[in-house]
Length: 360
Ligand SMILES: [Zn+2]
Image 1 (cartoon, rainbow, N blue to C red):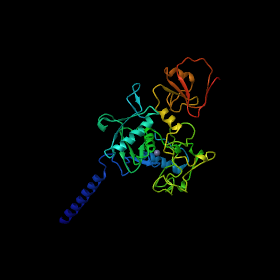
Image 2 (cartoon, rainbow, N blue to C red):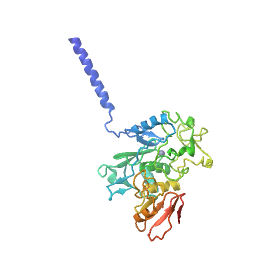
Image 3 (cartoon, rainbow, N blue to C red):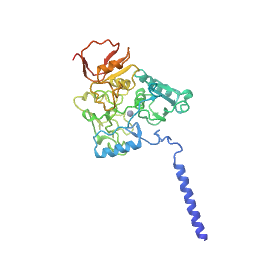
Image 4 (tube, rainbow, N blue to C red):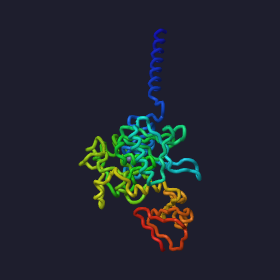
């Protein structure tokens, strides 16, 4: 009996120990930050994109079966508040973590202004730098050991982490992720323009170090492949020669630009400016209120045309009928429109690298 009591006591003690370990292991907050500022339930890919872990794992599984096939896209949401027709697009409420210095806060606000100057986006710091009392969806911006962001409006609190506050277009790059964009080199047509040399990637393209970094993710793409994009990675990104980061000279190149664009080889990965296509793409996803989009080849795969970037009108007549006086119609693809006499007081603009022809 005495012996039995002792065993029970030992079992109870072990049970208590187990419970204690479990309690201590469970994050008290689902968004508790890991060392690099990665929120719970998210995994970093491409070095700086935070996507739901379940999605990343599904991509990894799919890639093992078919390495170069485009992967199912994690649907990103544009920033919006309210409900149609009173919906306000492009407002991004944010707050700074207490670890962001005044100088770094200024650097962030300057980077935000770069995007506010080209698109209908408005980054708004919450009153008293506390968002939770005034809005449901917002960005918490922190100083960290890495640069990363979730993609698009996730819902609830989300994060942008910055280490390189001194480089404005690294911050802009993360802000563009936050607005809903992936990397240029993850476009489904990527392999026609660049070659990824997986043998030169630390741990390989599907290894455990930079797992899943070069998946082909169908994403919001516009126009021709954009070597000059601030969202493109450099020829040395993740190279075995650059264990400390992308900014080193490498002989083992990770991204090789294919013919006939070899002159872009050393230019990819710039972090000094928005390219013209970067400006166009961000502004098309976050258009000014009187902008309408027109694409004669839109196939309806995103839904009935409504004049947005994802669902452009397919005929000039529809675009003219739905664009307010003083507004702008953007032609997104080489299209030919019928001859006619029009008295609509709108401006028709061809997007970069696009030709719009009238008279057929
Ligand atoms: Zn990135």
